[in-house]
Amino acid sequence: MMMIYAALCLALFAGLSTLPSSFLPDEDQGYFMSSIQLPSDATMQRTLKVVDTFEEEIAHRQAVEKVTL
Image (cartoon, rainbow, N blue to C red):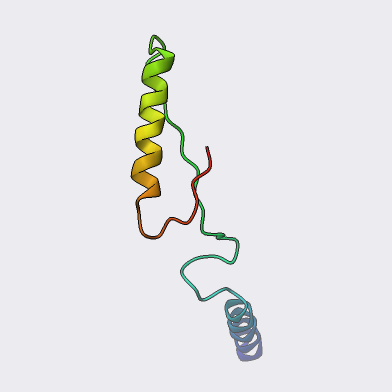
């Protein structure tokens, strides 16, 4: 019985040692996507103004290198 317990502990330790230890996964590429939703009766001019304002706010942040819409 003790051998089974020891084998399970070793298997658990081996499994845990393969987990990533960093907070962010390797898949994190340093980008994000966003969605802007206005009311259905919003005009094109209002939509463009909101998008332009959003783009300006994001582009002026120090950590942002590039903004693509």
